[in-house]
Length: 179
Image (cartoon, rainbow, N blue to C red; front, side, top):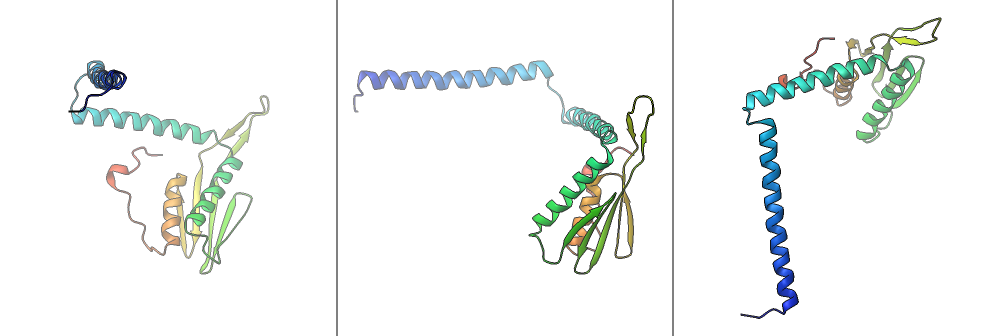
């Protein structure tokens, strides 16, 4: 057996104690988490997570009501541009827009995306109230209405890839709130 110098032996002993301390600290943190939350079943955890998801969806719905028409259109333009970029910027595709309409020209034809939203200005406070936003995707004989931008983008992506029918959203990911 090789005899290590005193400094190296002391250093290896310090590293061993540091590793042991880290393991003990990790175990202590794990125990504290269990003591604070208690031991729960998988079903209870699932219910808690679903409640948090519902709360976040309600907050997202409220936030969406506070976004102006121009901001919605900027988000839509960026989303469609990203969709084209992720598809490798296919030739013959052009994105134009004016007003509350965005037009995506493809070699096969064009898709029109319209934002339908009411805005009202209060006279005394000069505050703008925004209504619920709805999206209309039209083109190739289709007129589809969407409540949110995610559904619209999912369908547009499927159509651009040549899918005639958009697969339904898996049940565990389906929207749980009715708008």
